[in-house]
Length: 77
Image 1 (cartoon, rainbow, N blue to C red):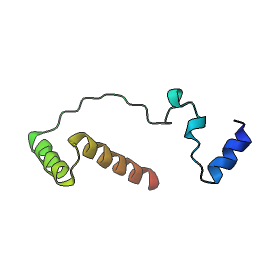
Image 2 (cartoon, rainbow, N blue to C red):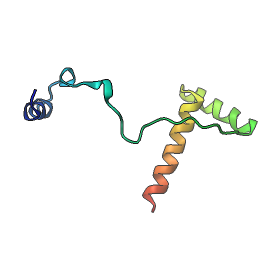
Image 3 (cartoon, one colour):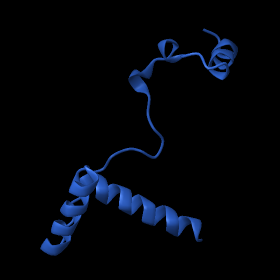
């Protein structure tokens, strides 16, 4: 499929994923890197309560809260 046809189909709302090779697709700035962080017990317990309340994992809530803080900091500079 030529790029112009792909663009036209995409712009018209057609599903073009069958025309793409997604085996090597990458999300910019989304590469994962493992880090270890030590938290006080009270903080882990608080994170776990909030994660449970929201129905997500501890790791998810940490990522979301850190991302929100970093985005907020970036938007204020």
